[in-house]
Length: 98
Image (cartoon, rainbow, N blue to C red; front, side, top):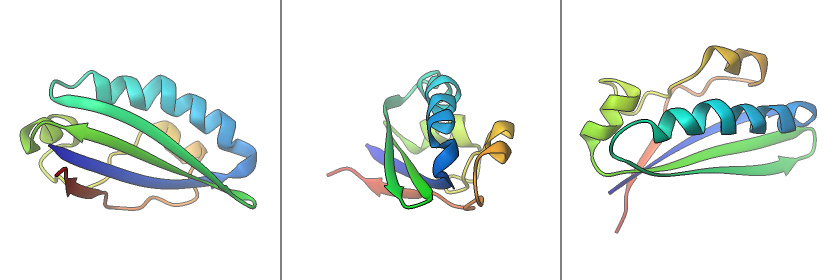
């Protein structure tokens, strides 16, 4: 099993709206891909900035490719992310679950 972790930051004033967007758009997208085993959205407030992590579990690299494309570690963004995110981190992290 592979754990895929993405990190993003938004202004704290937009955090609730971004959390709702993630639940409606991103979580549904993750769950629609065969081989996705779990999706969690984590949130942490840090002054005027809110951090988000999407933590997903996948049964294989092939399942991740079906979601993210050929470049496994490249972050996947939605058009709406431009309305919220402070920057676009290019890569995600993958961990083997032991």
